[in-house]
Length: 151
Image (cartoon, rainbow, N blue to C red; front, side):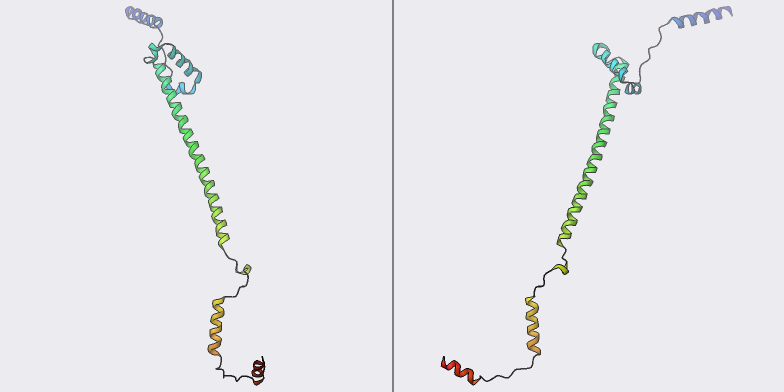
């Protein structure tokens, strides 16, 4: 029992003296903390040897790529919303123009001038001659004949 107690104490002593494990920043942490991300990227750009092998450098690059993708997605959504607003404005303007053109084409019969219809006049004249009694030829007036002979 004494030996096992000594062995346990020795193990704890060795464990306490060992170098602490390095913790690496996660991608999510680096996405949220700009200062830490920029510091890690500066460290990685100063020492090209650790750039490809260090987990912090890799996480920082992944964080930057995700931030860029999120920003692009937000920009695309904003452009889409702006496009839809402009399209709706254009549609409303075209509807207003179409309604104005239709209103201009409509004819108000009460504001039109009264103009005789030649086709209706010809039809009325044809109807009146057809329904009128036949006329007998009239002899020329003798006085009119004398005036015409003197001239």
